[in-house]
Image (cartoon, rainbow, N blue to C red):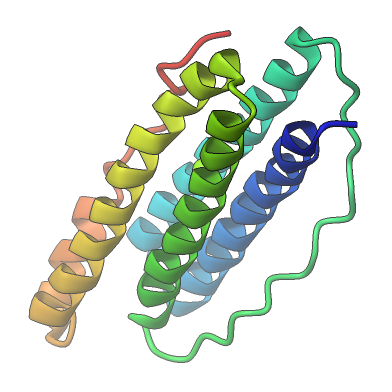
Amino acid sequence: MSKIYELLNDQVNKEFYSSYLYLYFANFYVDKGLNGFANWYKVQSQEENAHAMLFIQYIQNNDMEVTLEAIKKPDVKLNGNIDALKASLEHEKYITKSIHSIYEQALCEKDFRTIQFLDWFIKEQGEEESAASELVKKMELFGLDAKGLYMLDQEMASRIYTPPSLTL
Ligand code: MG
């Protein structure tokens, strides 16, 4: 079994974990009465699920078998409203590193097909990190004031799920 296959298969689990983590954040905001934030994270959770499915499809398109592993329980402790936003940024940085290391391995193995597949995810991670960082900044600027928080929640309520632009 090649190293690249192992890494791709691990990434399936990491994307499902991301989906699970963001669902946990959505539930946290439901409890807080911030339904806009909850909506934003439910959409994010759907997106991560779609990422996992793309990795599965890619593995299968290459005649390899997918092994589904247990998804661990989200282990982030949340207290204040900003905590999930900060944890998201940290998590996305971790996912970026993970995808970069698969890319590095693909370069090493001259696996050009995987490199091309991962190009979309490299760009996507850039967008994920900047979106997460923007939310932290907005929350720091406006979220401490009740009116600001209300407006921010309204804004987050408008996010709609759109499937990934990558098709395989
Ligand atoms: Mg993802």
